[in-house]
Image (tube, rainbow, N blue to C red; front, top):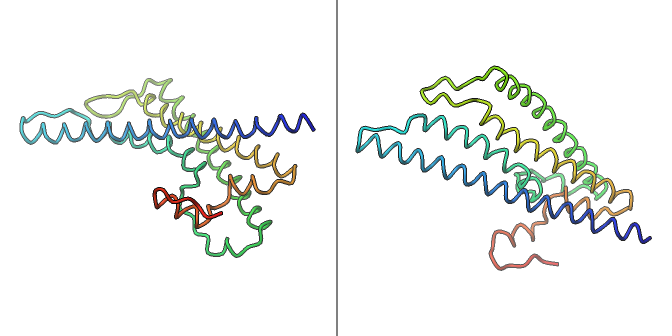
Length: 202
């Protein structure tokens, strides 16, 4: 019993750490997008008033957006901020909803692993060949690819941690923890997020 009591906080701690890291990474992605916006604005103003260009602003913004996208994956996954169509989902009994959540989580993990596998192949090839972008700035392609791959790798790690936590909860017959991590948010919780200061209904 003492061992089980010690394990639960560790699992909760791992999820809490994952949430913090995911939030920081999402903020870093937001910073990349803001940086790209600033570069584009400077480029547009330079072209308009000084006949001068940053050079490669569109290319840099594309790389920043790609990296920022994968940087946000883990945060969206943990906060269940993705769009879900749950017209039928809410009508299912709890065991069926839980099974659907598990199947969906496993399918997403498999897809993410495939993307990570083939993405690494592209990165390794670019690094080996010293590939650069076909533009005036000639950015080494391995750099933006590494950033994109890092976000995706962290996403896979977070999914693995969550699934391990869910499986351990199910072994202990704790369906609530699985629903909290994989299920859709209750409508009351969504409304509380949309209205600042409003607490979710018990």
